[in-house]
Length: 114
Image (tube, rainbow, N blue to C red; front, side):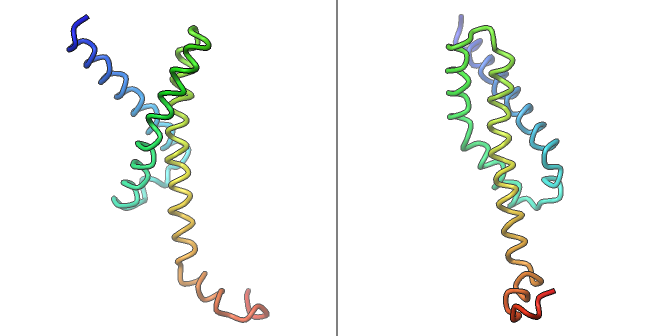
Protein backbone atom coordinates (compact mmCIF):
# COMPACT_ATOMS: atom_id res chain seq x y z
CA UNK A 1 0.00 0.00 0.00
CA UNK A 2 1.29 3.44 -0.84
CA UNK A 3 1.47 6.33 1.61
CA UNK A 4 -1.00 8.25 -0.56
CA UNK A 5 -3.57 5.49 -0.16
CA UNK A 6 -3.06 5.47 3.62
CA UNK A 7 -3.46 9.27 3.73
CA UNK A 8 -6.64 9.05 1.67
CA UNK A 9 -8.07 6.40 3.96
CA UNK A 10 -7.20 8.45 7.04
CA UNK A 11 -8.88 11.51 5.49
CA UNK A 12 -11.95 9.45 4.59
CA UNK A 13 -12.14 8.06 8.12
CA UNK A 14 -11.65 11.50 9.64
CA UNK A 15 -14.34 12.96 7.41
CA UNK A 16 -16.78 10.17 8.27
CA UNK A 17 -16.10 10.50 11.99
CA UNK A 18 -16.55 14.27 11.81
CA UNK A 19 -19.80 13.96 9.87
CA UNK A 20 -21.21 11.38 12.28
CA UNK A 21 -20.21 13.38 15.35
CA UNK A 22 -21.65 16.67 14.09
CA UNK A 23 -24.85 14.97 12.92
CA UNK A 24 -25.32 13.42 16.35
CA UNK A 25 -24.60 16.74 18.02
CA UNK A 26 -27.12 18.61 15.89
CA UNK A 27 -29.79 15.98 16.53
CA UNK A 28 -29.20 16.15 20.29
CA UNK A 29 -28.73 19.93 20.49
CA UNK A 30 -30.35 21.84 17.63
CA UNK A 31 -29.71 25.05 19.60
CA UNK A 32 -26.16 24.93 18.26
CA UNK A 33 -27.54 26.65 15.14
CA UNK A 34 -28.65 29.61 17.28
CA UNK A 35 -25.24 30.12 18.89
CA UNK A 36 -22.80 32.75 17.72
CA UNK A 37 -19.52 31.87 16.01
CA UNK A 38 -17.45 32.15 19.19
CA UNK A 39 -19.76 29.77 21.06
CA UNK A 40 -19.79 27.32 18.15
CA UNK A 41 -15.99 27.42 18.06
CA UNK A 42 -15.93 26.52 21.78
CA UNK A 43 -18.20 23.55 21.10
CA UNK A 44 -16.11 22.28 18.20
CA UNK A 45 -12.89 22.81 20.16
CA UNK A 46 -14.29 20.65 22.96
CA UNK A 47 -15.14 17.98 20.40
CA UNK A 48 -11.67 18.14 18.81
CA UNK A 49 -10.17 17.77 22.28
CA UNK A 50 -11.96 14.44 22.68
CA UNK A 51 -10.97 12.89 19.33
CA UNK A 52 -7.68 11.26 20.36
CA UNK A 53 -9.16 9.59 23.42
CA UNK A 54 -12.30 8.50 21.52
CA UNK A 55 -10.30 7.00 18.64
CA UNK A 56 -7.98 5.20 21.07
CA UNK A 57 -11.05 3.77 22.77
CA UNK A 58 -12.42 2.69 19.42
CA UNK A 59 -9.21 0.79 18.61
CA UNK A 60 -9.30 -0.87 22.03
CA UNK A 61 -12.89 -1.93 21.36
CA UNK A 62 -11.88 -3.32 17.97
CA UNK A 63 -9.03 -5.31 19.49
CA UNK A 64 -11.44 -6.80 22.02
CA UNK A 65 -14.14 -7.49 19.43
CA UNK A 66 -12.91 -7.37 15.81
CA UNK A 67 -16.41 -7.90 14.38
CA UNK A 68 -17.85 -4.79 16.00
CA UNK A 69 -16.50 -2.19 13.56
CA UNK A 70 -19.79 -0.36 13.07
CA UNK A 71 -20.57 -0.29 16.78
CA UNK A 72 -17.08 0.92 17.66
CA UNK A 73 -17.30 3.73 15.11
CA UNK A 74 -20.73 4.80 16.38
CA UNK A 75 -19.52 4.79 19.98
CA UNK A 76 -16.48 6.84 18.97
CA UNK A 77 -18.68 9.42 17.20
CA UNK A 78 -21.08 9.52 20.13
CA UNK A 79 -18.22 10.09 22.58
CA UNK A 80 -17.06 13.06 20.53
CA UNK A 81 -20.60 14.42 20.17
CA UNK A 82 -21.19 14.20 23.92
CA UNK A 83 -18.17 16.45 24.46
CA UNK A 84 -19.97 19.00 22.28
CA UNK A 85 -23.22 18.54 24.21
CA UNK A 86 -21.41 19.12 27.49
CA UNK A 87 -19.87 22.33 26.15
CA UNK A 88 -23.26 23.55 24.91
CA UNK A 89 -24.68 22.92 28.38
CA UNK A 90 -21.81 24.89 29.92
CA UNK A 91 -22.41 27.79 27.54
CA UNK A 92 -26.14 27.81 28.24
CA UNK A 93 -25.48 27.66 31.99
CA UNK A 94 -23.16 30.67 31.68
CA UNK A 95 -25.86 32.59 29.83
CA UNK A 96 -28.48 31.79 32.45
CA UNK A 97 -26.17 32.74 35.30
CA UNK A 98 -25.13 35.99 33.63
CA UNK A 99 -28.66 37.06 32.66
CA UNK A 100 -30.10 40.24 34.19
CA UNK A 101 -33.16 38.44 35.60
CA UNK A 102 -30.95 35.95 37.40
CA UNK A 103 -28.72 38.70 38.79
CA UNK A 104 -31.69 40.72 40.03
CA UNK A 105 -33.06 37.64 41.81
CA UNK A 106 -29.73 37.16 43.54
CA UNK A 107 -29.78 40.76 44.74
CA UNK A 108 -33.39 40.70 46.01
CA UNK A 109 -34.07 39.67 49.60
CA UNK A 110 -35.33 36.04 49.75
CA UNK A 111 -38.90 37.02 50.68
CA UNK A 112 -39.25 39.09 47.50
CA UNK A 113 -38.14 36.46 44.99
CA UNK A 114 -41.02 35.38 42.73
